[in-house]
Length: 140
Image 1 (cartoon, rainbow, N blue to C red):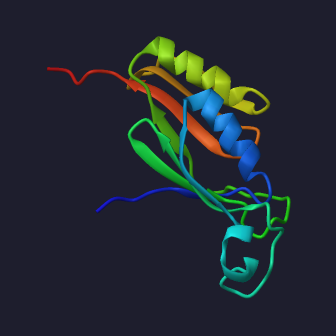
Image 2: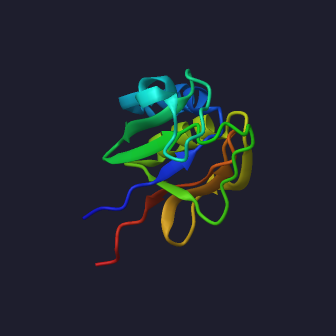
């Protein structure tokens, strides 16, 4: 069993796919538009623009993240959660943190903490909250 994140970008999914491809080396596993579906309709019977993303899947590191344009309202809302990016080393953490912060907002600058050699929090340009970290090795 696994739990995967699924994000609704409300009309900005292709922009998000390109951004995460650059910032996180995300690989597109699949991308389907509403026009690819039967009759171009959603399960609820609505018909969003045919070129918008009904479903896409990105491979980021060892994780799969699903995403969609949703109902294309133009107003994505991501509340009550953060995605955590665990990096191999401090240099990677800085590179990924800076890339994700481009066009977004840094909430906690990247730096050392009692539990990580690097830890920082940001909200990216789409409103998705991220925690970027390199955990400290457990005391042994």
